[in-house]
Image (cartoon, rainbow, N blue to C red; front, top):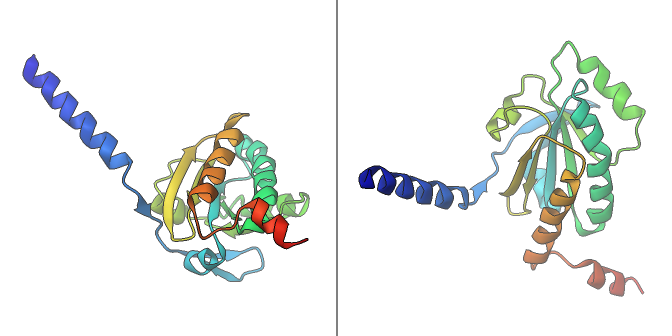
Length: 178
């Protein structure tokens, strides 16, 4: 009994320490809705990135996207970019462009119809949100969406900017615009 408890404690410690180790985001290249190739490492040169893996058939995704768009607008001046990566299959991919065109989203939409990039990031379903620092480090990920999750996501974005000394604060940006 004592031995099994000891083993469980050790395994728990290993899991906790493993989850706190930062992981670099795998680089990838996907096409946007215009057919242009977009490479993650190139986008990271402009600042941190919030990736949203989504699909047109995913109701939770469609509820989350306007919330992420608001976060993107709030932090855009500080360099945050949102990459909305559609995981629609080739069969449902024809719905992506009309949906995006009917919305006022201010982010880059990429197509991952084989879901290879989502799997690279460890996502098992949609929506799946990943926050990447400008240095390419995955600092947060979140699977699923229920109303209110955007509060946690925004808190993670804010924390990233607070901890990143290379990114100007909103206050310092505003004071330079006077």
